[in-house]
Image (cartoon, rainbow, N blue to C red; front, side, top):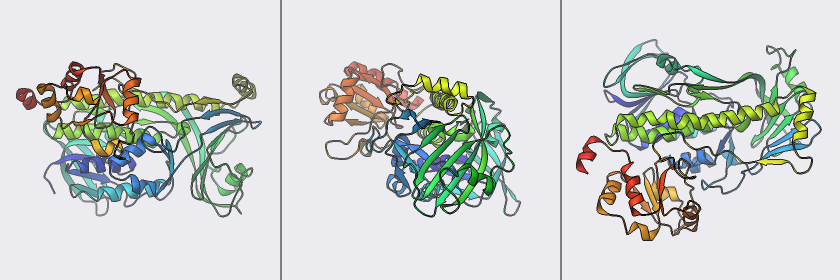
Length: 501
């Protein structure tokens, strides 16, 4: 075990386990501290999107994740009290822009097991179960962690060059960092009820948001015989008793009864919309629910955490390898916070549609939607906030798609977790020596436009090339060889690389 770990991860849920996989792939020495002895056995998150599956693919775990999830091929419907569909979330596809389905449903304990087994592939990843971080102190060259072994009460000191708090909504790391939470205004208690069907039931095979002012509710077809209902608490409801079986069965009696299903979990949650200010304080950083919490109306809670680590992992890798200045880590919050804020804001907006309880206001809401075909809204695609990208062009700061190449492989199988220059074949031959050297020092992979999908994307941007980051976001586009040279100059570099240039 190393005297100084590269990264200490506090919390071993999906975000922490995912980060352990990404850092383990890079060969970094990682310590993971988790206070629980085993995976939480009950369902929590149930949805992730195509971009997140692409991140799992980058971990080498796509096939394993596919065995514990299902693609969601139908959109989410928003239905009013009379049964009319007001709104439909579009964007469902068997093969979306990330080379997979756009939506996936899963049972969280199974997904966590896949991620933890994945982390076991890497000898450099050390997991300490039943260990609780009690204190963190920062010094110039490392952070010192005081860790309590909950099995025997002993304490051990650890050192790590960076600490990432993936320790959830009540994050100790966030509290030690002194990062306040900014409130976006939604705090509403809901009953979350997970059921396991015992026999076939006449239930929708897609997600339905019941926008009924007398009792807003959500229904989800999760996976196999698993189903979920989320039911808003109303005035007069007793949070202490509403999760009891008799109350639950009354609330879902229009759909199923105790002869149809067993209760796996029934609990009252308060849905929050908050985001931290200060995702980095020196050697300490935040990810996942420790940095932000979103209402579930878009199914983006887990997705946001996985996007966090996809953005952060390669930056940590470059900094720890001495291939980028420490200031690269400052782009983590500036890029991710505006991005996640847009998702939270849309979830709050949808919550306003769903949670309307005034019949008059609900009637006004219904009248705003067409009486014919329901309104369709596409899944949002916000760009990154300011950071390591040019900010110019519609595709910049957005994920580059993952098409199949001429040999049948998906793009990421060729580029790996590297920078990639994706360009017209003719342009690749025009690059000068210094540009080629700069790309080589950054381990950038060059891919030409023989894929029709790549050619079409470049056409859509009126571009001859795109420089893509390891997290598959576009750093910038160029129209000619000098433009590529300018993009290459924006690649992260160390002082030694600058002298070599």
